[in-house]
Length: 80
Image (cartoon, rainbow, N blue to C red; front, side):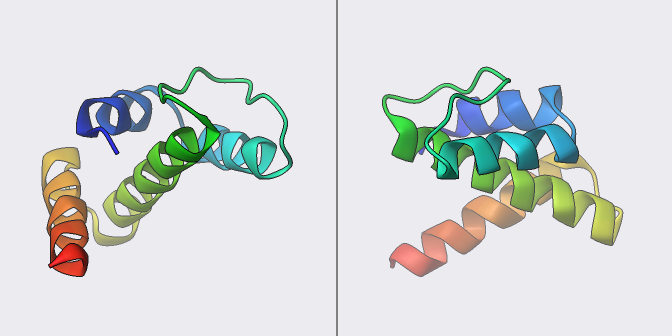
């Protein structure tokens, strides 16, 4: 998981575009958008993270930096 890659796609694509890319990867197809990652698993991780961030922004009406911090905080807590 690379935060700069997540940030890039979260800021560049809509929720619908990200959902279509997620579905494409899950169906072992090439997504229509560019997603950084060393393999399909990492690309999927980036898409899922970007989706969670954008959904929280929309649901809670918070800005991107706060939603990104919330996401990284949840990930850190789940690891420790």
